[in-house]
Length: 89
Image (cartoon, rainbow, N blue to C red; front, side):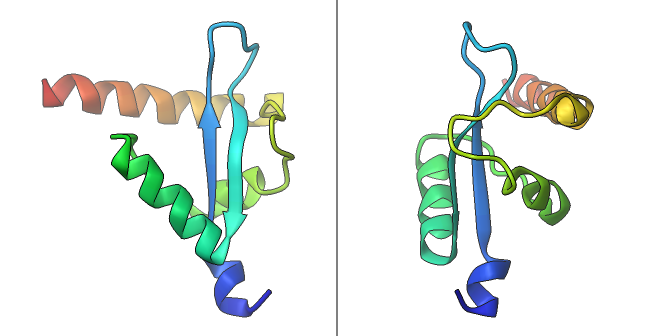
């Protein structure tokens, strides 16, 4: 992996009705990261850019729920997204 690929990274989370916590549904570096972001935008999913948060989430495996230590930051992000979506209506 090149230094540039290491800098380009993306993680996608999903939170289903049966999930105890949001889980990692996609993750990748470089070109794969770009495809993850493109697909999210195509689907109308907001893309949040936080290298620190992505760095933490990249440590998780696919289909792994976020750990309790990340609940608060993800909850704050979800509230922000909900408020943003409500403002766009």
